[in-house]
Figure 1 (cartoon, rainbow, N blue to C red):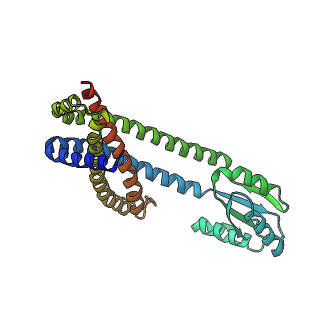
Figure 2 (figure 1 turned 90 degrees about the vertical axis):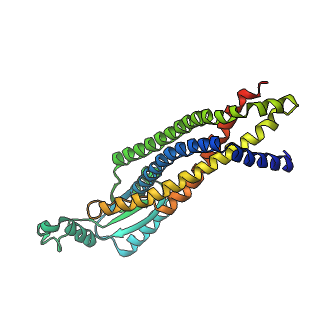
Length: 298
C-alpha cells in the first residue's frame, strides 16, 4: 500500500470521526467500557501472576550435612552446589545459627532449648534457592548424590501443588481474557455497525463508481484502530488512578495484620498500556471490518 493512500485513509478517518461525532463517541464509549472490564480483570491477573512468581521464588531446598565437617569441606560443597544447573544461590547455615533462629521462633517458649548450646542436636545445612522451581527434583537428586550429605528436603508434594495451582490460575486467566475479548468484539461490532449504517449511502456511491472493497474498508479500518486507541487510553487512565488509590488503601488497611505485596504501580502502567493498546486496536479494527462487510455487497 502506497504512503499516499495511507495518508488519504488517515485523513478521511479523522474527518469521518469528527463529522459523525455522536456515533463516534458512542463507539469509543463501548470500546472504553469493554476495555475497562478487561483492564480491571488484567490488573487482577497481573497481581495473581506476580504473587505466584513471588511464591515460586521462595521455594528452597534444605541440605543437611554430616556432623564434624571441616571449613574446607563445607566451602567445597558450597561451590559444588552453586555450580549445579538450575541453582540460583546457596548459603551456609551453621548449627549454632540454626539453634539461634529456632530459639527466636519459639518466643516465650525459648526456655525449652536451655542447655542445648553445648550439645546442639541440629545439623549444619545449606539453603539452596532455584532459578526455576521446576528444577527442584533434578537439583535434589544431584545434591543427594554428593558425599557428606545426610538429608535433602524440599517439600515435593507442596511444590507440585503450588506449581499446579499457579499453572491453572494462569491458564484460566488467559482463557477468560480471550473470552472477554471475543465478547467485546461482538458488542463493539454491533455499535460500530450503527455508524456504518448511517454512512451506507456513501459506501454505496463509492462502490457504484468503481471503488474496490479495500479502498472502502481503509478509512473504516483506521477509524477502528483510532477508536480502540482512544478507548484504551481513557480506560488506562481510569484504571491507573483507581489502582493507585486502591493499592494504597489495601496496604494501609493490612498494615500490621498481613503482608500483601501488590504489583508496583510502574509495572501495572507499563504492562497494561501495552496490553490494552493491543487489545483496543484488535477489537476496534476487527469490529469495524465485521460491521462493514454487509454493506460492501452492493
